[in-house]
Amino acid sequence: MKQNARVLARRGLLRADVTVTRASQIMWAYSSPELYDLFVVRRGWTPQQLGEFVGNALAAAQLPMK
Image (tube, rainbow, N blue to C red; front, side, top):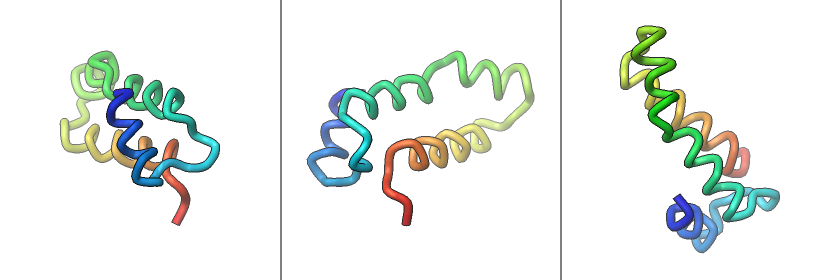
């Protein structure tokens, strides 16, 4: 995830208050298998619903507001 965060930083896509380290930690947490288990396996979300949720959450946590 650190490499992904570095790419976002190089492209100027991270919010000013989000470091590469913080961005990589956020991406690591949202891509954890435990999140899939909690939402899809235990709560019945579809993988698509989880993907949309994670995508929105990642954007909100790291990218500048439009």
